[in-house]
Image (cartoon, rainbow, N blue to C red):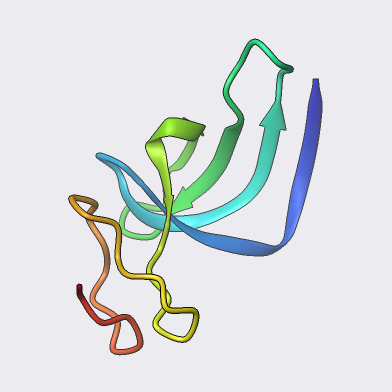
Length: 81
């Protein structure tokens, strides 16, 4: 098992939980998904979300649209589409 603290944190969306910041990743090995340790913006909850449930937040500067079907905070710098 490997635990990696992320510095800086990564803005992500955990499906069914909402946007937040991933601050660590847990890797249990080749038979398991990566686990993203994420602080959810709206509730302050900490969730350990499996990789298939995690999406990067949109980033207008990088040309990355908001993930389809994922809850996302309204951000003037992140256009829809």
